[in-house]
Length: 260
Image (tube, rainbow, N blue to C red; front, side, top):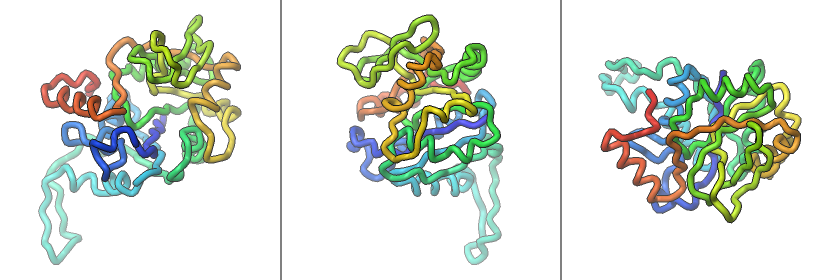
């Protein structure tokens, strides 16, 4: 099974943290945020990733192309680059990572559409954002999706209300309101799973296609969007304050999203 991670946005609201790195590459405890997200999926046996690149995507490519040299002790003879020896085994040695250029200015729905060809042969696939961490039980999310038989299932969480609220009725998303003015209900926690045979009926070509505005509401209106209620930890990294809080959690060994 594959996990699609959206990591192409510009992260304009967190520019104070870095003007150089794309937001998924912001380090938490010395490792990029996207690495933490991938470790969460890997803890549940999902180690095949499709990364939707956009803004400064080459920096994400560079990180993975040089991954082993970044984290290992190495020996080499300077005049012989083929002499490189890595001294440390890595836990992530069986990860498969496909890095896809999905457009610098593409919206979220367009980015998912643009990786469709890399999902061929899959019965279902996961989707999440590259800027939020959680201790979502991925196995339970997948089990709920299979049980429901619906086209899509999203995780529902309960944080503050600048995000898009969803109204849940009998285990389905009854209404999907992107960025409402109130903040009392569930929101989409960003850990999603879709039926690969049916979900594409709700997509279309075009860089302006927005997952949260153009796709998920249509699936909901068709009665085909289910919910997995997550009552554990979730935090989106949208501000410098949230980013700093994540690093404090990691430094104090209180990283609640760490399930590995």
